[in-house]
Length: 286
Image (tube, rainbow, N blue to C red; front, side):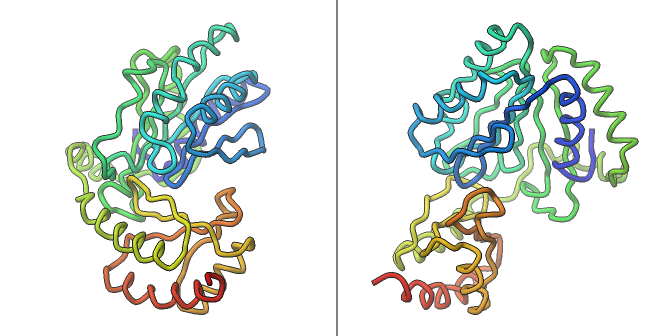
């Protein structure tokens, strides 16, 4: 199944599940750090696997019918995402609740990993739905073509696939042309060269940390998520903007006091930005 954006897929999945539950717990592990969303609240997690696992357990104590995770690249290791968090705990929660809990894994950055392949969730937890987009791993921003894959072992798989297909066709999404769908099907073993992004990461991360920025070194994707040098991330982003550097405040991702930097740009752009980062840093780092 193909449609325009991962958000569309998740919308379809939510439409399938949300009518069946009173509350939804969502475990989201993003490219810069893990965080847990339960209802509308968010608890920031560190890299300690027990902290992650315990918070995961608390979330699953709620009356949920699905849990969503994404790829783990930064403060948590791949093992934290798929093993130490404990997919077995989802199964335990399912048994305690007396009903099935589906796992939704959002993985557009899976193939842009610097420390070896990211393990698949399907072998670890059969009741899984995978959502992904090729806009990242094939460097096709704007195309946003991807797919939803339901495990053959997903309970109610036929009903879910039929419901998601119907929603994709009828809810007004801009679906990719058939020729693009056929083309991308042949590219499942193809990706951009992660070494290109790794080199850019190393250059930018090394330069910024030497200036005094506090940044987790990501293990994949093409973002840095440093702490801002004062508490107001929106104001800090404006200071960088005055240096002709465009970043995004962390508040937009639920992480105040941080900012997001994308390094999927030309090397020259990174080099031109470094003096501006340094000028701003010197105002706060003594």
